[in-house]
Length: 392
Length: 190
Image 1 (tube, chains in turn brown, yellow):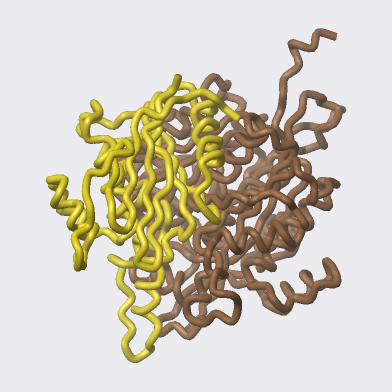
Image 2 (image 1 turned 30 degrees about the horizontal axis):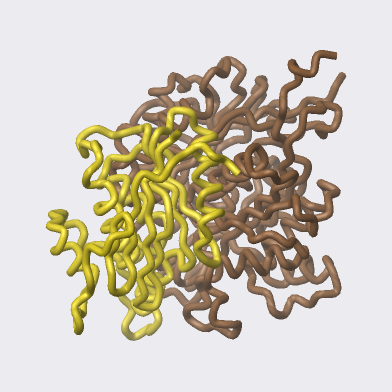
């Protein structure tokens, strides 16, 4: 066999989603296909004076999942750390790797980590530092390497995966465990409220009458590796095909009107790829007026307006640092079933430019999906994935 | 480790000194209350938006200004062959603590969008991207402490992953407990 024709692939070997809907990837996918969501109206969540519409992890359920992992009690870990550890443990178990090896790296995606500790910190003074939460997570698995925290606002989850791909290709690591996690607090919700960015009803991604986003709590993890032996790639594994991060260089909190940065990220992710193979686009779709308009402009400029497009924010809310990881896992399952998941919450689309919003879960043949994500700081990312189909 | 770039210039801002390419450029005057504003005036920068920024963004923006003012960046057209790769230890905790004060007391509750917008570590990369029209990758990493090998790895990997990149503004930008530590580099692909 001619080894030069062998292509080195980066692929997933395990994943997990911890959300208010379910405590596994499969459980979350099944719940979403049934149209479930735990987003709900809360009059005074976290003692806030104003109401919000959020999706919160059940603390008791989280603690029992955490306690079931090992003899370690749930005492001594924050909610964010527990969610991240449960997600990572499940993904590592599925991957069947020893996480205490030197060739395993943890890459943690989070925007606010343990920020609620600024109000009241019963732990050591360093605990609000993101590197410290990451250390706690990696140490739980006896991993000897300094974990890398990616904190790139809302694009962190996809940026962390791009960092993982770089570490596999150029950094000498054999396995990278990507963990995205964020929890909600008075800090985070009040800030989004001060921005007038939140809707107090269920969000309507790409809807003509959308009026803001919903926030949600979640953790999600994917274990990636790299190799050239196709027989070792698990059925329905994510296979990385391209990705990029690009800055709008326009505004720190407002999306670009022209979708410039996202368009360049899409070009970076899809360069040289036959786009007729694209089954669907999983957009960021936060349901803020500006974000969804910007995405509709970028998707049109890329010539992808006919491709079915969805947003999963109506099921989970915007899960911040977890979003880019969670939504990629959900999209993987959908691509395996050759379908695009419906955009829950939206009946009538209406954006600056027309896009093909999936209003029903429907058949979507194709080899690949494109994940889009954008956030504060003018950052945008796009990542293209295929899945490894089982041999017939 | 990647050996795919050279460091063309560097800039360092500590609590009492500014160094450019290792040479002392400015020293904090005894009793100075506003060191970052002192630097702004001393280098003749004219960018009113500076005064809206939090301390991390001010420190990073000043570092980028010192590093890039002699380059051919024209500040009119977005440069897609430039990227920003920054890291620090405290993320945005300095501004986070400021924002927390605005919501801590229910009887004095005034959450401010102007403060909240800076409660993300990567806003400093956005501010630098806007100022210098840098349209390539912008990434922000959080690590326990500055480590030159790790910075070199992450920068080298960014060059390796994106062939069209020619320049990266990379390094450390930290502001925590009134302490400023900025070490920025202009990395050029070999």
